[in-house]
Structures are given as structure tokens and as C-alpha cells.
Length: 255
Image 1: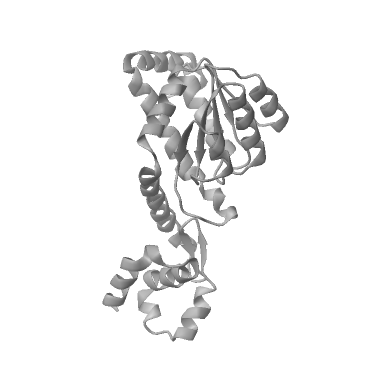
Image 2: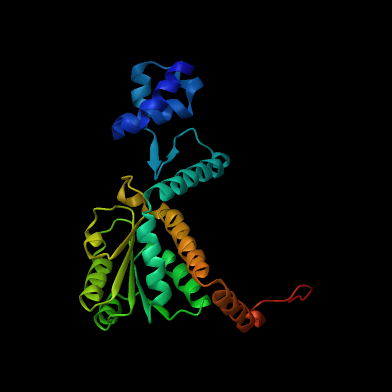
């Protein structure tokens, strides 16, 4: 059985999606799989759910989930590093650091990523804003101009509101930065600088897990901007901390 498992691991990346589901079950349940017939394996394969690389079966218990999520997140982070173009990443960092104004466009699940990015950029003293309403997004995009930067965040790369806002911003002369999962997606046509979080194809509903890789890219951008002018941004962060210090209870204080 050990030889079989090794062979599956060697050819895993070449397997079709349906074959990967069977391979996933065998790799995760080797002891159980060695006692099953081909018919039983095929039936169990149909009962396995894969969400963004996190495999879930009928036998899994709540106690099994933390380890599965951490393993899936680890794979996502490795894919991030492999998928990101360093020249594009560096150009995006420079554009954000130099922009007179930064507008962030997103919808649905990507709004969490956009909010995190907005918060971090504001902490650095950058002129940044985002809009949840699609009408406001279009109006804001239409008012952009050269010297400003527009960021579109979309897992699928085909969220219409985000794509349209970024297209308009680019037409108005703003530099455009795209964070998406797929290099050949619709929104990529309007990207001056493209940051891909992966190239793996998952079901559209799996985008609920996409924030893991997106937030990682946000952290990369945040620290990279600081690295462009360490002393300046360190001072800005200290000022931001001072401004909001009274928003937290001090140690020893109680309600």
C-alpha cells in the first residue's frame, strides 16, 4: 500500500478533477481504503466534498476540522508564493506608495479583504477609500485621474461591478492593480499590475475560503510599502497608534 500511496503522490498534479477526488480519499484514509473494493471506493469518492482543497467526508468530526483547515491554508500560502510575479508585485507596491489617492473596488466575499487593505493603508497615512455600493464605485472610478491608483479585488476575476469599476478607472488614467485567483480572467485585461493568488480552479462557492490567500497578499503589500521608506512609515504608524490609543482599555482597567 505504501508504494501505491507514493505513486499517487507523484502523479497527483497530472490527475483530472474526478481522479483527484479518488486520490484524495485514498491518501487521507489509507487504512480504510486498503480494505475496500473498487466499487466501494467509487461510491465513497462521490461522498467526499472538497472546498478549496479542504476535503470533507461523512466520517469527519468537528474535532478533525482545525487540522484540515490549517493544512489547506498552508497549501494556499505555498500556491501564493509560486503564483505571484515579483516584478508585478514590486510595481504595485511602488504605485501604491506614490499614489495621490487609492480607491479599492470589491464585492461580496472580497469586501473583507478590501476592508483590511483599507485599514492598513490608512494606518500608513495613505489617502485611501473604498465603496461597497456599486453605484458609488462607478462614480468614484469615473472621477479618477493619472497619479491615482485603483485596486480591484475579486477571486473569480469576473465580478461585473468590480471589473466595470476598474475598467473605468483605467480609462480615466489611473494605474490599476488587480488581485485575483486567475491570470486569464476578465479583470486581468484592465490590470497594469496583476497579483495572482493561485491558478487552481475551484468551485465558485469555494470563494468563501479565498480570503485566506487574499489577506496574505494584503499583508505582503502592507509590509512591502513600509520597506520602501522604513523610517517614514514607522513614524506614521506611531502617530496612528497615538491617535487611537484611547479606544482601548488599558491593562488593569475594568468595566
